[in-house]
Length: 144
Image 1 (cartoon, rainbow, N blue to C red):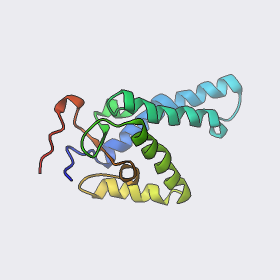
Image 2: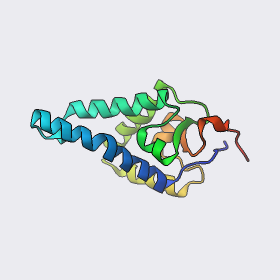
Image 3: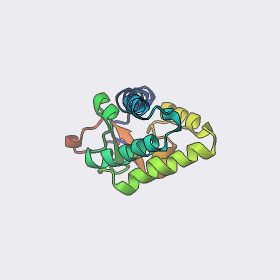
Image 4: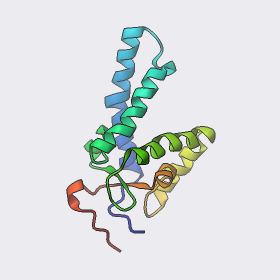
């Protein structure tokens, strides 16, 4: 399997941090101001963030806001656009694996992205995806 322009650890971490600052943090602050409750205990916020992580890449060529800013996106192994099923596997099943292993799999994934040539993490393997610098208009021709 050839991977076209895979995105590594630091750029992916930067995209996650941007998503946190642009989406999660303001959502938590608004929730706290409206309800007066601790946003960390909110199932409502978790559901919104999960839906955001699943739906936006399907409709926005594999991008979420943080990834778009960083110029990286999620695609299937063959370079095609992600689907709802792909993103459900990536977000929900990947998240379940991370939860069941009490976060150990997150550390393993970080090393996988940093060390592996294809830069794929556990949730990428579960969903058959990878994160790439290739833009949708690049055509995704893969090189040996």
